[in-house]
Every structure is written in structure tokens, then in C-alpha cells.
Amino acid sequence: MNTETDSQISSLRARLKGKVIGSEDPQYDAERGVFFTGFDRRPAAIVRVGNASDVARVVGLARETGSELAVRSGGHSRAGDGTSDGGIVLDLSAMNAVEIDTDGQAAWAQTGVNAGGYIKATGEHGLATQLGDTASVGLGGITLCGGMGFLVRRQGLTIDDVLAAEVVTADGELLDVHKDSHPDLFWALRGGGGNFGVVTRLRLRLHKIDQVIGGMLVLPASADVITGIVAAADAAPEDLSVIAKVMKKAPPLPFIPREQHGKAVVMARMVYAGEPAAGEKAIGPIRALATPIADLVRPIRYVEMYEGPEPPGPAFSAGTNLLIDELSAAGAETILTHLETATAAIASVELRVLGGAMARVAEGATAFGHRRAKLMVNIAAAVMPERVGERAEYETWAAGLVEALSGGVTTPAYVGFIGEEGEDGVRRAYPPATLNRLTRVKSRYDPHNLFHLNLNVAPDMRGN
Image 1 (cartoon, helix red, strand yellow):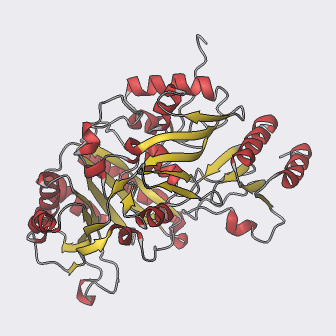
Image 2 (cartoon, helix red, strand yellow):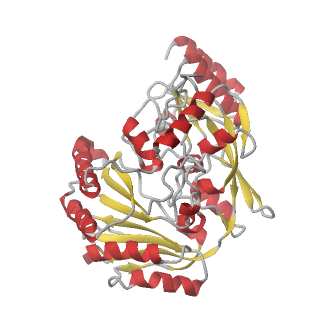
Image 3 (cartoon, one colour):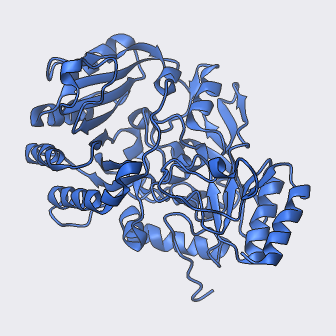
């Protein structure tokens, strides 16, 4: 970055409600990091913005100086998009207010709040919005990608509860966006990622959800258990959503018996957001698949699904995700076989059973491109800091499992779990008609691609 830009960053300090953190500041090293610690990048400045005016000033600075701009909500991007080498990081974490309208069953939430903070705030009123499954994920990032979590079959994607947004565009203008105001942008924000501007606030619909049947059920891993979970979750009432992680090795958690540590397991987290008796009946077929290694599924408050410590982020997550229609017994055996060959200490295949309310939204109603997918398969091998040199090996392993499950056919994918896949990832995330429409919206609101650190939809100004 040049001297003039450095000077402009320095002058920005006096004009912001938030804080500018440069390389000379003692907290710089801590603040420049993201969830995946292997992205060891050194931005020229990290700007922890305090309001929408701060956001507009930072966007203007990046636009005027040609600096790369990284927008960070929770920093969980698999591609490390929340940081930059030599650019400006716009950090939303201090913008974390949640205002709840209990009568209207809606909330205005700033996009720097994380999922856990949002769920806690709404849960105090016995209300919830369908989010993801991890407390530390940023509200902005997960929402713009779509949002799949513990209520996806009951309530649909997070974007299905988005009522309005406040957005700072590439030209620094703050827009109120909803179905009657900038409807093209409203459509694109719901699934199109961070391509179109910085979303500073979201208005989200709330649902009466407080007491649920929820928690984790740990079962021994076998093909019958894996296919049985998928089938039972698919056949269950839509009040039940299940996220089942098949792991190469059971972690040494206190609720898993010592003799099971290091053995292949399925760790199934689930929520039934309906009548308790019906919930026990719906979960029963999953419990009956094998003698549980641990059974932590019980009546709880929904907010408890987001409580408890999270493990530190690995250096990288090798792998990708697939959206598929079914998982055969042969496919389950393929998963188990490949997990046995994984050299990563932590290797897993997560299965998210979809359908229900998510699938009832019309194709094309939002920028989320694959409404009818029945199952998301998320393949991950954690690259620990001491094993960074083995990242390519882990990626090869993951690619082999993708090939085996897909038969070599290019499969659709969920934006939120795509890593550094470039144009191939864009084509997997968005069907052609959706991508064409996103390109038109991008060309209107960000013609110079200022917001490119994401699964990037590039502008096309031909004919404009």
C-alpha cells in the first residue's frame, strides 16, 4: 500500500466511531486472524466499524485507493475471505446490537453479532430465527449464504426469514432494501453472498420456539446406521432436523466412553421443535438403529443448542460439499472406506437432511440455487497447524471421496461451505439462470468488483 493510502488510513482514525488497528498496534496480530488460522495475512489496517457511516467511509477509502477490501462478520469463510494481504479489513464485530419487536415477531440485528449472541437475545423472549449450528459464526455471513441449521426443515433457510436489509453499496450509499425497495438487490442478497455490498443490519422474522427436544446422539458408524439416520430424518415430521457427522475417530470428549475413543462414530445433533411426545416418537427410529454410545438428546431450551465451548479453528479445512438427492448403502460404505484411509487426524463427512420448508419455496424466488436438494454432504479434513505441509494430501483425499460419491459428475454445492474453488465453485453454487441474474445485479451495484473476496460473481457490463 502506498504512502498516500497510509496517510488516508491515519486520517480515518479521527473520523470514525469505531477503531482503526494498524500493524503498530499491540492487538494487530490477534485482530488480523480468522477462524482458519492458516490464513496468515497482513492487512494494511483492520477497521472495527461502529455504525453504517463508518462502513461507508471504509468502503469509500477502498474504492478511492484501489485497496483490496475484506468484509468480516464472523470470519468463518473456508477460503479465508475475512482477511487480506495489504488490503483493508472491514470488521463488523462491534456492530452486534439486536432489537426485538415481540409484537411483530421480528428483529433488527446488526450483522456483526454472531449466531450464539442472536439466539440468546431472541431466546429470552421464547423466539428464534433459523440459523446455522455454530455459535461463533457471524450473522451476516451465514445469512447471505442461505443459512442451514437446526430448524431448516421446519422453517426453511435463514434467508426465508429475511424481511429487509440495510446495505452500503460500492458507491458508499446506504440503501433500505426489501421486496418493494431495490427488489433486484433484495433477491440477490438472499443466497448471493457478500457480492453486492456490506449488509449492516437485517430485519428477520421470528418464530415461537423455546422448549425443544434436542442434543446429540452418538452411534457406532456403519453403513446401516448412516443410511438409517438419513432415511429416518427424511421420513420424520418437519419439526425434526438432523445434522449427522460421520467421524473417522471419536474425539476424547467426556461423554464418550474411553473405550470408544479413536473409533469411527456418527455424532448426530438434532432438534425437534414440536410437541415433546411427538418428538420422542420421531427420534425413536434413530435411537433404535444401534445401541447409543452416548445419548444427550433431551428436553431443553433451544438456546442450549448454541451453548458450550467450541474447539479452536484448524489451520485449514480441506474438502468441499455436495448437494445430492439420496445416499445409497454403497455410498455409505464409500464414506466409511474413505474415512479409514484419511491421514488427517480429524476427518469427517457431515450429512444434513434437507427438504421440508426449505423445498417449498419456489425455485428462483431467492438467489439460493438448489431448493430441491435432499441432502448436503460436507467433506472435511482438518489441517492442524503442525500439519500444514500435508494440506495438498488432505485435499487429494477429499477430492477422491467427491469423485466416488458423485461418479465424476459435477454436483451442486452450498455457498457457505465452498472453499477456494473459484469459478468452478460459482458454477456449482448457482444454476445458469440464477448466475445470469446475479451477474446483472452485480453489474448494477458493484460494476468494478470492489466486493470480490467471496465466492465471487463477477460483473459483466456488456450491453449496459
